[in-house]
Length: 317
Length: 317
Image 1 (cartoon, rainbow over the protein chains, first blue to last red):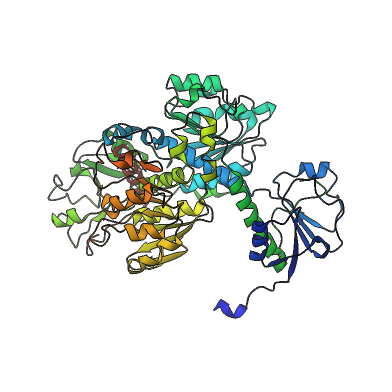
Image 2: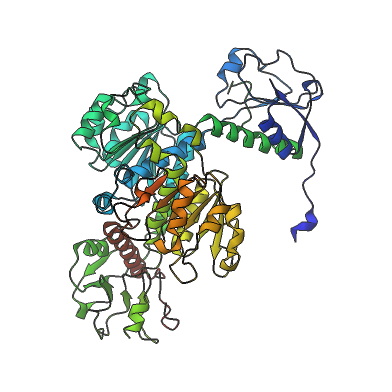
């Protein structure tokens, strides 16, 4: 019986939280087996704010700093992270992606299961009229455009539902869980093969109006377009036209262009459109996700295990 | 390189489809590597209807019969499946569960992500008012009441989203993927520990009004109740009261009591209610799922592999 192996050896961890006391992070530290102390006595510093207030020098006792952002360019730009450092720096890379991926899955499922019609219905017979349109993700092909943190969190969720995923990333290097991975340069081959499309790529010059009239024309009459990335990835006017002419199944948008979407915009009243107000990752869920990450990393530090999301201080990310 | 191993040896399979020619099943048979022939020449019979028209005797050439139902009691009751038989009989057990599980997941996600509010909104600011209620399934506890085919299909989907599952079944025998499994006799311990509840148990005397005033009172203010089983599992009057008094987060119902739900029923107009008209598994998706099962079983038969969903003719299921 494994009971005889005993628990892993834990060392005591003295943890400072900055810039201010934060009860949720204090709880997270204690759940991980740490004690909250002032910075002068701390082995670890858990940071809960931007680089602006960050101490310009750390006491020698500090062995580990946890930053709250997924991307840490601003910290390097501010000269706060030395290239060579005895301190281990960790970020929150990957920590906030799961909620956005879950939101994308929710939007896609709500679309293919006809919830926009059902949620407006007040009679069983009227609701039943939509039943013929109800579809499943099982054995359907979903293109995930952008296989960064959000895409990589979404792919196993789609896999658990039996969908086949086509991933698109810059390099075309195979993404785990995807049936095929296309480099961005070959994205033109994806539209005609996808039953549905989820946009999770960053907003860059290369992704501006990535989905326009030509791409929409290659999608099917029951295809849903889900955008949890940035509004600028979709040509809104072309999308409205495709929706008005029933050339695609629908659009589910957590981000829009323009954003916020004005009250009189046609997207508010078209059927088969789902709008959520850029809330795939609301502040409450971000705080909760960061606290869980802190708790897990404090426990790893206490056990002498490798920390999650370690920053490469030479590479700068 | 595995190419040198060659393809598995396939024998030719002559397959009859009954009671009538069915183009979709014909395609499924051919996809599996079979040829459609009249029953007199067939090694296998794929059945697409109830026991009423089933042949009272089969030609000696028939080695395998595929029935289209998940439960096959009616076939045994009609004396069509001999206890001792050289023929292998297969059912469609498990085949239709995935779509119902996907529907349950859709309803739960739509609820916790505030889609009932969002789908009625026509202004960004009004939509944003619901953002504070948006939640995630990650690290939340979901009770899955009834761990038959639907429950067992749902649990890995919830797992992929990071939820912890409490399963309830008759025996209490641990269900794979669940954090804990409770026997029905101890279901009273489940309500206070679950953030959300999904009902996927059969309608029996024991499950009548399984969710009533006492159970609803133990759920939390943000708990969703999802019912994809049968309307009778929920005490509708008690549910309406709990929803009116905001004592739970909401209810998402694919089945209702009474069903169909009358036009003037309060559930149609309460906020935080999602009604879908008993369409977790609409006929089109069932036909598609059966065709996929047939195709896979024909391929297995051709390769001499074990068939899926073999019926124990002695046990009767």
